[in-house]
Image (cartoon, rainbow, N blue to C red; front, top):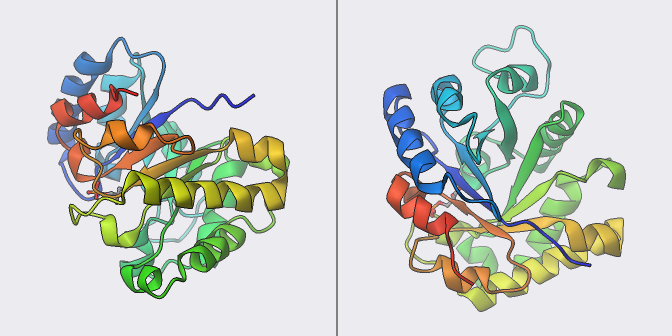
Length: 253
Ligand SMILES: O=C[C@H](O)COP(=O)(O)O
């Protein structure tokens, strides 16, 4: 039986100071207070995690972080551990976003270490994968994604995969206004599910949630969510405004 609870997540990237994030979180809570059928998550910058948690703790909105470091503590200037994220109220953590791969040198190997640290610390990892425009044009989309998933999930057993979410974010669609068509998204999500099936079996493949990300807006979410293998969205720009993100959370099928 395939019952996957949709997960709509807002990645606020390097936007909003603490007070600005608190204000948006308050507006969002008022808009989605009665939402019960969808999991909602927002990932503000590190500096806003604790104050935002104070606003959302009694609401359906869960807190996520945008990154972590795999060591528990020590001399790692500028890094944040799983324990710190949990103490700040986080339940989710986004790992391997293409911006981190592109600008901060993250590789499949570091992504894998971060995923394993999140699982060890009982944070729900959102593993981001996606192909560039050149990789799509040269028809390498599937091989690129296959490699990102297999390397990202190296040495992770099926027992550990339970809470992991995959976010498919084609790089050419991020912040460009160029959304993948719902058919393109479905084709890739189905492929990703088949990769999980080969590695972990049918049951896990059917239960794992796969989000789409890349220029998701209030006017395209409904079409995307109608596709059978699209289980939610990882939203950037359109999640910065509570009204527009609230509408995305209330997608219509
Ligand atoms: O994590 C979110 C994605 O990078 C999508 O960003 P976007 O909705 O601004 O295109």
